Image 1 (cartoon, rainbow, N blue to C red):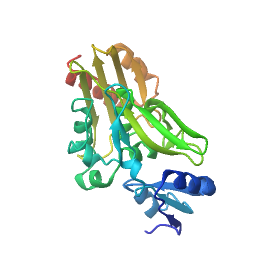
Image 2: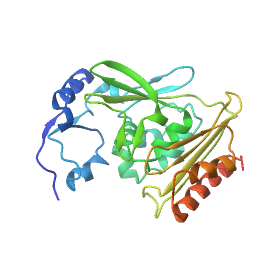
Image 3: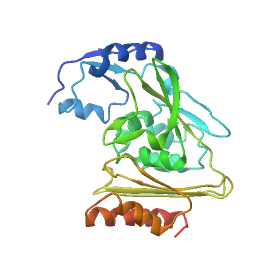
Length: 264
């Protein structure tokens, strides 16, 4: 199938992109790598009247030093660029490893970290990983710029906090210490597929940061602050109301992530 007809715009400034989206209202959509939205357009699951391509906006491809020793990744930085280590990784390899496990190389060459988060798919890798890392989403819109925790960015299946005219323009990833322990595990039907269940576990004794994130929940990722505790994880998963199969896969994903981190 082919997409329904739409007007295509490719601004070269963030200001112009915001203005275009504001004028379009609900009829406008942003596209970057197109690895998620493209298939939805072809299947006519998404029918925007105006498509705003943000890949010509140079500042959205920038990578800069963030707060502390963290890094600010422009929303249009690709998974492939992160996987290849083209940018500084303040997490000592977490970003590189996760990026390399996303879909297939052809997808990673085009898909962007911002697009993955803004698409709002609960089964996307970055949704859970960025929540576990304590990353922040930087949003620009008609009223200016705002930051929110990445853990709160996705509000449901394909739903986010983005309001009319707003664009996810960057993601701030805080630094981990060299003593940090990290584990990430996901269940997929085959390599490259979206996950049926996933979990990320972080413990950084030097910064005092510890959290477990349960992803692919069909809604917002579940964040459990504090050191990994199997009883708390079980309680959080049970509260999601999964059937027996989904409960087991999410529980096993969490335990395997903790084992990878050396915490179980």
